[in-house]
Image (cartoon, rainbow, N blue to C red; front, side, top):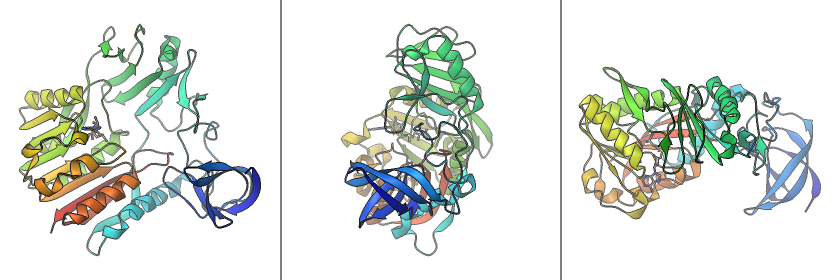
Length: 398
Ligand SMILES: C[S@@+](CC[C@H](N)C(=O)[O-])C[C@H]1O[C@@H](n2cnc3c(N)ncnc32)[C@H](O)[C@@H]1O
């Protein structure tokens, strides 16, 4: 390999690489924009596709831009900084549309723009003994963007404070900025508390001095509810993104009296429905998250019960049969495990939430083959600057 070539970038694909053709073969070229004319070095093959590195921009395409972060080329976080910010909503929407295209018949609502939802409030830093930072693209080399332009500014301040307190000894630190405080969760023992943060460390997690449970405020038809978030649990990546998801799902579930929530976490998507009067049942593998969901439900007097179960192991889902709505919000790999049982659960409506468009396309095929028709599709940009997008889809049993 190691050849020099001149290419025109045809498009930018999910995960953020530019895509071009060279001698009849596909080539991925990171750090480019559609329409860019580039000189590249073809460096090798990964997973059957050629990879190339830009040596020079011979001409920029119409949507090209200069990166706004000096670390963009080395950091693994932002693949889209070579594209002007105003095009991100259209580019990300095109990824969602491609995943759902076979099912977007006439009558399905789709606005074709990924709604921007503000800075990220959840990051994972890695430690190298001296510094906390992000892994570089495709490597374990540490990059320390200071401050990082796509995360909530509070988090950059806590990164420096945690580093000063020795948290770079941890292999990884999850930092989450919630309405009532910041969680720092490190995977090492003996870490010192960081002033102003709710700090947890070790495995199993232990609270460091003054650590407390934090919460998110979620919209309901009757005002906000305060929902407990355990340290280390999954939290949707932006504050406005989660609020928009909840409002969309409340609208889609209007009139539902029985709702199932698979991959429920701490109940972020279904506790608001319980507050609206529905009876909710949920399941997730994260025991702490499930316990927090049940605790919030008890405190608010809601009809919601969450169960700890591994949905990859085809568990007994009898409690989820015959729902008005089934919400399915799987991890990146998709909901293959849970959807295997769809033929026996037969909910009237299905709400799918996906952060990976290959998994979304695969799950959409399963759902359509079980007799569901796509009614509405929404794209949300929960990952500013990154080559990811969130898709919410509403399906109705025909
Ligand atoms: C994308 S998150 C969604 C969480 C929740 N719906 C929310 O909005 O906060 C995916 C969830 O799937 C859970 N999960 C991952 N693998 C699982 C499995 N095999 N069985 C059950 N839950 C699993 C994770 O614990 C996580 O809470």
